[in-house]
Amino acid sequence: MAAEPIPLDDRTWLLVLTGAGVSAESGVPTFRGVDGLWRTHPVERVASPEGFAADPALVWEFYSERRALAGTVAPNPGHRALVRAEERLGERFLLVTQNVDGLHRRAGSSRLVELHGNLFTSRCSRCAREPFPDSTAYPSGTVPVCDACGARLRPHIVWFGEMLDERNLGAIDAFLEAGRQGRLLFLAAGTSGAVYPAAGLVDVARRAGADTWLVNADVADNAQHFDHVLRGKSGELLPALLG
Ligand code: OAD
Image (cartoon, rainbow, N blue to C red; front, side, top):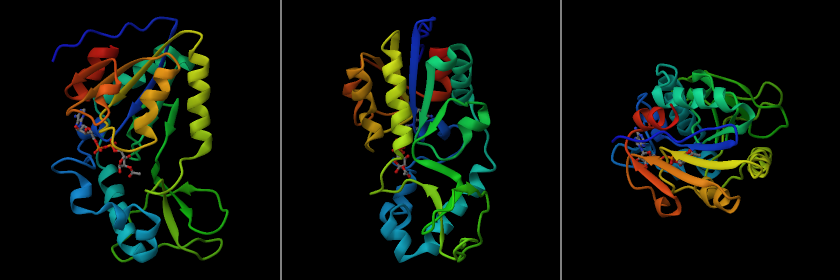
């Protein structure tokens, strides 16, 4: 689908929200849809505190497989288009991602909020030790433990039923507040609009005065909340829209 570029000028403040669809063309599976991860790995078993309490080895097996896969894939043109937008807009750009695969950072994005955590970071499930880098794909059946207190380690990922980090929400609010002085744009890409609070960001941005854009392969659940909806692949549409 042909798409006209979104004009980015020196008054533009661009807030971007990405989801699993942006990494799909890199070979990372999405969560929902026909081949989605949640079809074969029930959310409540591998992505909830209750699932972790019931079977931590299964949870670690799931995330270890994700780590092993994410280590073999590379950023795609969609990720790179967002890096170029950041280079152009500087502090007037913020990328909020629901993806935990680290591909935005590997592509070169740095004004980045990882809303749902990071696959390559672990933390203790009990003590106050800081989250730390951990790219180990643990062998099946292994549950790693904390060097400091001996409790189980867990992936540094926001699971269902858990709160988002207040500092991340604060960074988004501060960006939207600052963007009111200019021309505020909100662009969501590759996300089903099914998981809140992220799916509600379009409404928050609208209330702050943003013109809102959606790029998605299918009709997202919250598509009617956007001013402009483009259907297609983010690896093609983001370069077309952002240059
Ligand atoms: P989903 O799997 O729910 O949705 C991915 C969306 O991307 C779908 O609407 C697809 O149509 C679309 N899509 C697929 N390929 C695409 C492509 N090449 N270009 C553009 N769009 C494409 O993933 P998310 O919306 O990211 O949370 O899911 C949100 C959260 O739910 C995830 O962060 C995850 C999940 O449960 C946690 O694990 C905490």
